[in-house]
Image 1 (cartoon, rainbow over the protein chains, first blue to last red):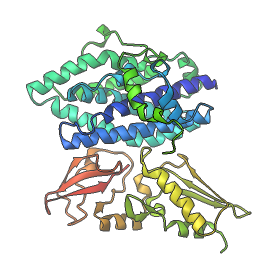
Image 2 (image 1 turned 90 degrees about the vertical axis):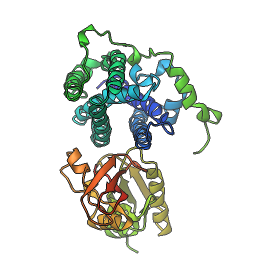
Image 3 (image 1 turned 60 degrees about the vertical axis):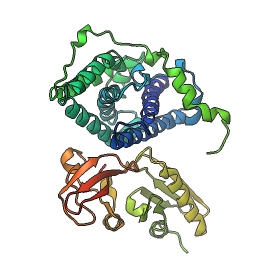
Image 4 (image 1 turned 60 degrees about the horizontal axis):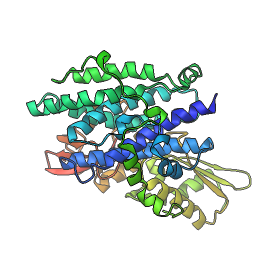
Amino acid sequence: MNELAIKDLLYKLADDQLILGHRNSEWTGFGPILEEDIAFSSMAQDKIGHSLAFYTLLQELGEADPDTVAFTRNANQFHNSQLVELPNGEYDFSLIRHFLYDNAEIIRFEMLSQSSYEPIAKVATKLKGEVKYHVLHANTWIKNLGSSTEEAILRLQSSLNEALPYALAMFENSKYEQELIDAGVYAGEEAVKTEWLKRIQAVIDKTDLKLPDLATIEPKFGGRYGEHTEHLQPLLDEMAEVFKIDPTAEW
Amino acid sequence: MSLTKENILTLLEEVKDPEIPVLSLVDLGVITGVEVSGDDHVTVNMTPTFAGCPAMDYMKKDVERTLEKHGISNYMVNMTFDSPWDSNKLSEKGRQHLKEFGLAPPPKYDLILDLDILEHVKCPYCDSDNTDMRTPFGPTLCRSMHYCNNCKQMFEQFKPL
């Protein structure tokens, strides 16, 4: 198996989780209610733990150690989708992003738990159990708020419309797509997207929200190839601020 | 002392979860393998409860300290995902200790998580199942928060995973 293809897959998985983990952590102390503050903080901790598991697999393939990889790259070296780097906005946007992202993430983990590449399969098997809680959290809130007050429905609908071009770009093909599929490493982005659409549609159908016609939406591609919005570099600078004071410090 | 898998496991009973000090790592189910080779080299395999659990590194060091305290210097402690942890791996003794500590133990389940499993957890204080889940996230990654309508108290559960 082409090691570059495996590394590319691992980087996109790890970078998505690191960046969304950091965004989630920005809710600590600011959640609209205490339980949500704790929920986003807990999911932040989970996501960063998940990124560590994948960065550790990269280290085993000869890449630098997880801290170096997480804290010393520039935005154009990150493979995350642009969806996860967007600012938190208001709670409705964070919730919609969490819903769109985690429903895709659990499908990736379910598929990767069957991967022919054993180290990924083992990690994915473990992590899919944890992400179930994230999906459960997202789906419960979308169902509750998406059929509650007029303001809640309007806000969620507007955030959904805003997030979808970025969400669809989560499934941007890598240049190794067919190679990974042929080797049984990964079912591929199209397969994930098809299943994802089914699952988000099923939740949205239980609310007063509407999924726009996806054929009319132009996905915001580029993230998987290092093209990012203006929001990623400031996030990275803040995330690495303490690390960069003394990169050799023992923690 | 002759080194066997059994007596290493007995030594490791001393090592407790730093966040739940009544629970040994053996009862928690995170010690997934102990091997003693011919030249008395001890290998201990561990696996994290939650991948992001900040206590795991501490637990690994605690295992190493405990082995050294008992004069074992030829050892290797590995953290792996080879036998991933799930909450069914908590021992009966561990479940009893959790309850006495005031944490509802996770139900044994078929590893298909749904809301039915999370709602109506038995209250560790009064044993009522007239309870509601307040949030699947709690003060640590492994705990959810619940309210008992019978004894009118908040309580935490060690989450099923």
